[in-house]
Amino acid sequence: MSQGAVGEPLLQVDDISVYYGNIAAVKGLSMSVPQGAIVTLIGSNGAGKSTTLRTISGLLHPKSGRITFEGKEISRSPGHEVVGMGIAHSPEGRRIFPRMTVDENLELGAFTRDDKEGIAADRDHVLELFPRLAERINQKAGTMSGGEQQMLAVARAMMAKPRLLLLDEPSMGLAPVLVDLIFDTIEKIRESGVTILLVEQNALAALRVADYAYVMESGFLKLQGPARELAEDDEVVRAYLGG
Amino acid sequence: MTTATAVEQAEMRIAMTRKEAVGRLLGVVLLLGVAAWLVLNLVTAPSQFFNSLLFGIGNGALYALIALGYTLVYGIIELINFAHGDLFMLSTVFSGFMMVYWLGAEGANPASWAKLLLTLVLAMGFGATINVLIERVAYRRLRRAPRLAALITAVGMSFILQWVGLRWNGSAPRLWPTVVPEGGISIGDVTLQYSTIMVVTFTIPVLLLLTYVVQRTKQGRAMRATAQDQDAARLMGINVDRTIAFTFALGGAMAGAAGLLYLEAVGTTRYDAGFHLGLIAFTAAVLGGIGNLAGAVLGGFLIGIIQGLNDGLPYGFGQKWSQTVVFSILIMVMVFKPTGILGQPTVEKV
Ligand SMILES: Nc1ncnc2c1ncn2[C@@H]1O[C@H](COP(=O)(O)OP(=O)(O)OP(=O)(O)O)[C@@H](O)[C@H]1O
Ligand SMILES: [Mg+2]
Image (cartoon, rainbow over all chains, first blue to last red; front, side, top):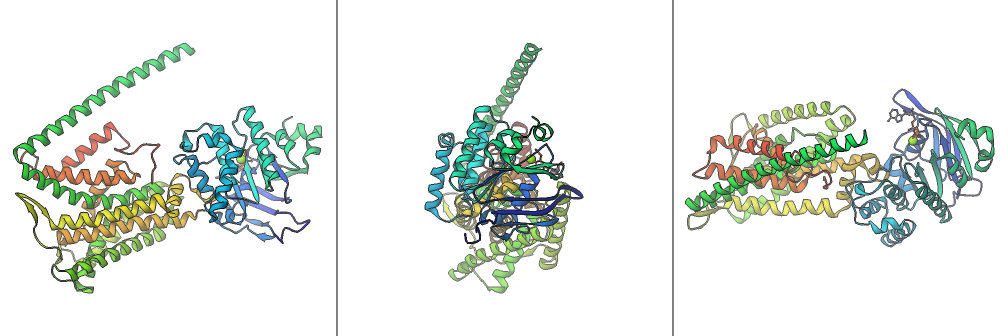
């Protein structure tokens, strides 16, 4: 915690470039996520948002540039170590374990932890956030509705007790009521002290909950600024946010 | 438009149910036929029936152990590990050398049986180590390559292991003295062979141990998660490479145990023993539903028993047709249930 001193961001991304083979998906991106904030990363399809999140959580590694979390460089850390450092990732497309029950999925979310009581408490906490999951606790996750699976994906990430939560399109494919529920929950999660980096297609909704926003286009960072300012700038909305 | 499609769909559904009904009827008829055949044999030659059954159970245990290795690996990385039967064969040779030369076990006595127990552990360690090495050297780097590349590599690995077996054990079948006494416990004309007792008493704890590891331990949970979604497993903090290696270790340990038990039960091995038994065990894994652990055990025992009964019963096709009967049954099961007996998309894979 000593490293989270005032002024220093929780997560710092410095000029990273990420490739799939020869193709660059992220080109010289820099961004920072302050402690306790909700930061959103938006942009059109194929802009490189998911790639950025996957690089932060160690599934991919940048070809150049560096990523630091709580002052420690993590750009070379393998994926399975990053979650133990305090970064949990709810991936695009949910990626829950379909042939396991809701409970087993939550248990896997806490895979790196040993504190039995803490895990039990967090389980209660996420089931309180998503009462629907409590009702389906012994159901095979693959048989749940899309919305329920999305809740599970977020709840599972929370089970890691992260200090930084990466959410990739948590509202994808959900009915409007559920979208509101997810965004409400995101705010609640922040209130419980977790910093959030949110990737969204639903840009206007994301700008409403976020403090700060980054806009990507074809791998490049196009814009950044306080979320409210971006949302109110008509030109920005028209050009980048499909308003 | 919409009504037309609805009608079409309804028609398709009726056609499907009709087809299913015919299939089910055929299946029932076949099962009744098999049951009638069993009853006929049981009534006319009861002691032969039970002797064949017991013999089949002993073989089935070995098939089950080997089938587990196929199904574990397939369950986690969807690779048919062609070299697995040959790993079993190497384990028979290892067990022979360990028992006879390195531990000097001689005759059927308690000292030898203690050595047998020790060799079981060592053979399991041997199988595990070799399987992990194979994965590390050959399969790991091919994990993102096309499926065929890994498959061909597995075939190549099979040849390499056979070559090692040939150099180690010799090109001819080699007789190894065993420590299991001849004969068995008889009740009337029915004899429970000591070798069958040994195989089954060693197999059961090994299977229980495996079940415990997969169902109850953190490693087992990591295996099941990795089998379902590798990237998601990584995001949970699971070391996927290590988990896959661990799965190979488990499968190798099962092959190691099977190697020792086979050698002690049969008393001879050859460099190509793994081809034959591997094929049968792979069939057992497919029959039970590849990727499904309980299915591999079920398939193994089923094939063992079917073979035993077919080979030993007066109204059977006889040993010459053993293979044909096994594969005919496999084909029939595949026709009626392509996923195997216990293989269901929603069932736990690993
Ligand atoms: N596994 C992959 N192999 C090759 N190229 C990839 C791969 N994944 C993504 N890409 C490419 O990288 C670019 C960025 O993809 P990314 O998934 O990061 O976009 P995104 O901003 O998340 O888009 P969306 O909003 O559609 O999810 C795209 O052009 C995509 O085609
Ligand atoms: Mg994306």
